[in-house]
Image 1 (cartoon, rainbow, N blue to C red):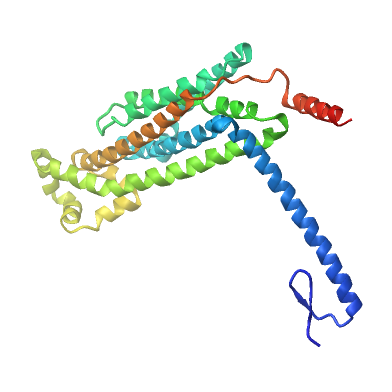
Image 2 (tube, rainbow, N blue to C red):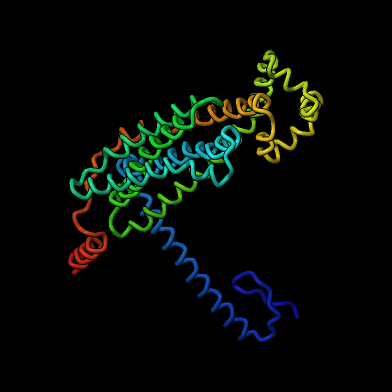
Length: 329
């Protein structure tokens, strides 16, 4: 006997017509329950999204700022590599050299939280912070292979002070832009946009870095070829492997692509063109990050006045629920 089709479109070898009817009925109930659950969740997400985007998208702007800011910050992923290639730091040392930015973020975050809790003012901080981050990224884009590490760290400190005024205040603004019952959706949306922006930023800016790195290193070597000290070091028999690689490609150049620490084994005059090429590519990346951060600053200028809740979200949600119940009675 042919298999009996069920309500779900599956074929089961049912020979009893009564059993087949019962299976079809139960499958229909399951399908209706699943469809109802999907409709309810979709309605909940749509309603929450409408709260974020209502009033011409004013409440959606902080999410766009988070997205733009994280895309712009994708450019700072090149700074640890700059520390390793240009300043000869190990991976651990390069991470420790990022501490000025971390200290700036922590200090600005703590100060912003204290001021906000005492005055209730929060809108101004993301505006100031995004402006500082924009200036810091544009200043860091001027860094070269010969820039003092002190100036680089000063730029990172300024960048951290700007970021510390943006991240948590923007999350608080988003949470206060929706009804209490939608705070969970708003917070998860902020996290999603932040992760999306970070992913896009890293992908785009690292692609930009490595797509321009080869040509910049070639130009740096062509420029260094006129330096007598460079020609003398390149003619040294101890550097014959690098000389052969520059003529025919491969060899040492392939090792540099796989492990940039090889550059630190070259004489300083021969390593300098590699450092110049990387610094030039990094400058382009940081300039792009600064431009994206400037867009975030301009969007924040359009941010409406933010009024923080006087009560906790839980208390506000309970009050809202009691009001709804009183209205239905």
